[in-house]
Image 1 (cartoon, rainbow, N blue to C red):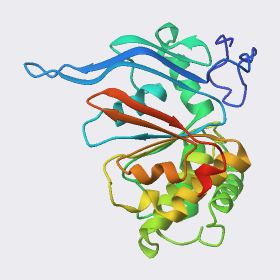
Image 2: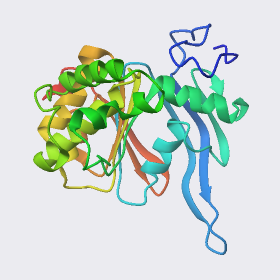
Image 3: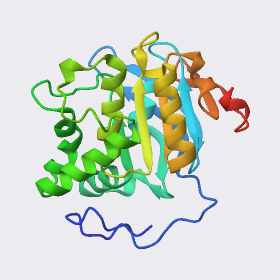
Image 4: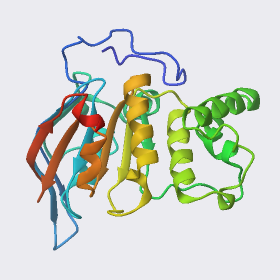
Length: 255
């Protein structure tokens, strides 16, 4: 992948595409240490993990197991403090700050634990925000937002305010906002909600549909073991280490 690109042109892909057999994301002996003065915390320890294009992987584990740290590392939001991470074969330590930003904006859609919808803005306006920040015209922002809302089944709700919607609809709107820039990878963080809506049938089924029908790579981090009902693969974390990595057939992931 050629990273010699124009940062201002967000639609221009890197000139050289990676080999099909290359993992999309690869962690090798990756560790993450948060150094908070006299009490450093080791969030991840010697993690080896490959995520391939087109996968739906659920990262599952109890609170404090390192799930959110792992997702931030995969999304180029944080760097490992030991070991390495490669995105499309490119070592993250070789990337400049601008290149990391370009890659995040070009390839990744993020759904945070708290959906962070602006209460004073319509659903359509919330979904359009990432494109507005990039300086696109109001017409393009509006049409792209409505297409993203249609993907999550909220095409008739764009005029409503967040307070008029339930939490499941909030989750769908947050997913639409992550989709509006047409990412190839969707990172969904529901780690702090072991019994909340993000993995209810509506959201789990939506993520599966985006994966199987729209070929979006999905990585979901959650405390819910039931994530395996929707994902093709379940990676279990505990104490910052991978305990299990179970891959299911496409058929078994649907039942």
